Each structure stands twice: as structure tokens, then as C-alpha cells.
Amino acid sequence: MRRLLTLLAAGVPLAAAVCLPTSASADNRGSASPAFNCATVSVNAPAGTEVESVTVIRQAGGTVYGTGILGGSVSGVPAYCEVTVTLTHPGDGDHAKVRTWLPVEGWNGRFQALGGSAYAAGDNGVGLGTAVKNGYAAATTDAGVGDVLDTDWALNSEGQVDTALLKNFADRSQHEMALVGKQVVDEVYGKAASYSYWNGCSTGGRQGYMEAQRHPGDFDGILADAPAVNWDEFEVATLWPQVVMNQEKTRPSSCEFNAFNEAALKACDKLDGVKDGLVSDPERCTYDPRRLIGAKVVCAGEEETITAADAAVVRKIWDGPRTTSGKRLWYGLPVGADFTSLAGDAPFPVPAAWVASWVKKQPSFDTSKLTYDQFTQVFRQSRNAYDEIIGTDDPDLAAFRESGGKLLTYHGQADQLIPTEGTVNYRERVERKLGGSHQVDDFYRLFLAPGTAHCALKGTVDDLAALTKWVEQGKAPEMLTASLTNASGQTLTRDLCRYPLVSHYKGQGAPADADSFRCVPPHHH
Image 1 (cartoon, rainbow, N blue to C red):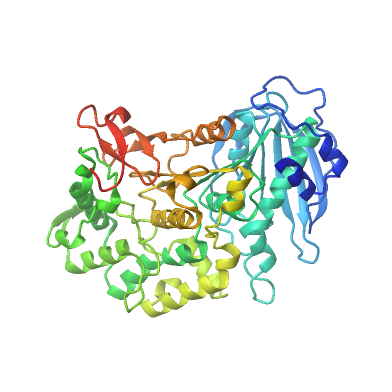
Image 2 (cartoon, rainbow, N blue to C red):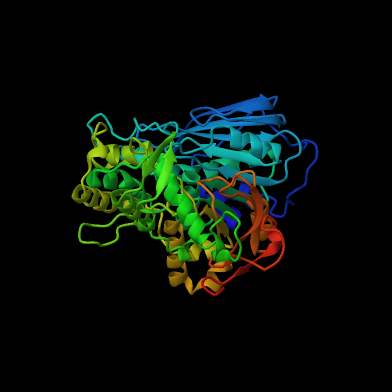
């Protein structure tokens, strides 16, 4: 029924939808189907759009090189059919490209949609190539915008926010990509995908949550890691370290910042029962940076003394943004997360661009000069103007639950770009909305990764395999096995615990071995 509704929404004639097979098995690898068609593909425009063009190219495969700032490459990609569909919303003047790559041979029967990063709405080619290499038909959209740090599209010629492109980036282009991508799969292979998955981290994680919230029938499974949900709040919040340093007239060096993280680790490492270079339960880490006042640290060959002003800055950054009266606005940089990105010499470009172009509508606006009062004003301005369009924080996932969908997320507890507590807060709000932790675990599971930076588990945890097993076999993941790097650079194997459980040492066994730990309720060690 879900697939039928999706096809109807895409404009597929009812007769065609009724005749589609509904029980094609995934992992049915083999040679190209006799119906395989990489010549001409017709696409029905999703509601509210027009199809501007469709191009079909048979690619030889090999090594795929990623475009844009992120670059990267993937080798050993098999031959694939590349279908590019350009959509526009009449009257909006936009041109959103949906790219779908389909392996000529060895299709596993599944469809995978790929999300973006920062201000890029979609994949740069590496994710598509990896998906095809793993047997998936894969799709992504550029939403008619640009690369990861391209924000030239924010304002129109009148200096006002281009609401059409913002809608594309926030929500509608990824939904239309899901509809178009599935049509293309059906056209090329002569049958529908057995299962559909979303795969994204950061902006891609936010897009996955938006799909669950607004388009619950698009995907059977959503993998949405380190999600940039609460966009209108956390983007402004990540300018807080710069505001603090400016207002306190103190800018600790990266070496001094590292000294605070090292001291916190030393104080909190053994909270999980063993010294292993990781803080497994950061909520119990109550290290006060003032304890480091007067300590000597060697930075670039020079001995420096940690001052009360240094400690005050770190304390405010870890605590997170507050109004001048002390009311919390959002969460701070997690203890243990690297300070370099948000507390470096200049504001991090992603939140700086958000405030300058979308909130202030002045691309040249200097966010490095914000006072505490101005920061509070900008924070509230962003929330009031943009929560509805791109907040992606609606806790009502009842429709997604009813559709049978599964949502799986990991978030690093040393995420230096998106405060982990924002994701925890969202999960807890879903629990309050939908009847508690046990009920929510039936369809939505969150795993927190100790000592892990932003999207840093890529390639070290097979979360997509865990999601497909959950969707297709009904086996919900109790843990996710991952390779973590501790403060000494050592690689440790850990079973990430299902939230709210935390990892605790059993009392025997090697600290580098996952079997030496078990998942226990927090605060009950």
C-alpha cells in the first residue's frame, strides 16, 4: 500500500501502479534484467513541478571522483546507468537536478537516497559510487543550490530571502527526489525497488529527520547520523564561542583549549570503570575548568599559565549560550570536542553565513563582532523566522511509526560542529509525545558514540547493514559495533549503546575490547 501511495503521489497512472510487483526480494544479485533499459526514461513530474529535461548515460564505472570542496573518490565502481532529471517549480525559476545511478548488473533490489552536507543538498558523487558498488540503485538532488559553502543563492535580486530555494533545501527537493528516483528505478529495471532507504549525515541527517516528519511514506528505513536538526537554533548557537571570546576579551590558544580537554578527560575517564582514553558518560563529567587555573602548559615551546579568564571562557563555551539574565538558549560545545572549528581565529563559515545571509539579509554582515545582547536577538530572530521551514524538530513521528518506517541515528559525543545534546533533546521530546522510551524504541533508536567527532564513524560502523536488518528481518539493533579512537590515538572496538544506556567496564578484560564492556542505565554504575 505504501509503495502504491508513493507512486500515485509521483503521478504514475493507477493502472501502472496496480500492476507493479510488490514482493521483489532484496539481495537478488545477478546479471542485468532482460528488462534493463538505459536508453530512454520517461518521468512523470511530482505534484507542483515540471520536468525540464531527462538525460540518460551509460557509464563504464571505475574510479569516481567527488566534486566540490569535499572531493574524495571511490574505486571499483561497476558499470552503471546515470539518469539526470531536472525539475522546476513553475514561477519559482529554480532548476533542481535529481541524479540516479543504477548498476547495470548485480542490483540488490534496494533504493538508497543520499543526503548532503552543510549547504549542499546532495551527494558529490562519492556516496552514489559507493552505493552502486554495494549493489544499490542510488539517487540524490542538488535542490537547485550549490556546493557545501556556497550561499550565493540565499537572497534574490531584491535582497530578500529566496524562499523557493530555501524550501527546496529545507524539504521539498529531497521528497521530490524520492518520488523521481523510485520512478527511474522502475523504468530502468522494469520493476519497483523492494525497499527504500535514506542515508545521510549532518545536513543529510537533518534531511532524513525531515523525511520522517513530513513525508513518512517515502522510506522504509532512514539512516540519519549527527543530524543538523534544530537548524534555526543550533546554527546560531555555534557562533557562541566567538561571542564569548570577544565579550570576555580573552582568546585562549588552541594549545590552551586542548589543555582543558585533557584535564576533563583525566578527571572523567574512569567514570566508566576503567581508564581507556574515552568519556563514556559525559553527563556525569562535571569537571570545572576553574580547577586548571594556575597550571603551566607548554605551547609552541613556550610555557604559559592558565588564567581565570581562560577558565571563564571555556566554562561559558561548554555551558552554551544564555541570555544576559542567565536563561539557556541552546547547548554548548560538548566537553572533549575539539575547539578549533568554533573557537578558532574566525567564526565557522556555516553559521556565519546563516546569520549574515538568512537572518540579517546582509551577506557582508560581520558576525565576529556580536555582543551578548545582539547574539540573543539574532538567536530569537532566527528561531521566529525559520523554525517552521527548516527547524526539523517536530517530535510527532506518529505517521512515520504507523507507516512501518525505522529511524536509526548515531551522534558523536565529541561533535565539534553540532551539539550532541540537541539530538538527545529531540529524542526525549519524541518520547514525551509518543508514550515513552520503550514505545519509541520500536521504530527509532539513537546511539551515542564516546569521543567521536562530527560524522567521524563513516567506514568504521556498518549502521546501514543494521538498518536493513531491522527493516527487512525485524531485528532491531541493541548495539552498534564501531571502531573508536581514544585520546592517545589508539583504536578501540566498542559496542555503542542504545540511548539512554551507557557503556561500563565489566571489571575484567582488555580496555580495547568491546567484550570488556556492557551497556547499563546511566547513573547506576
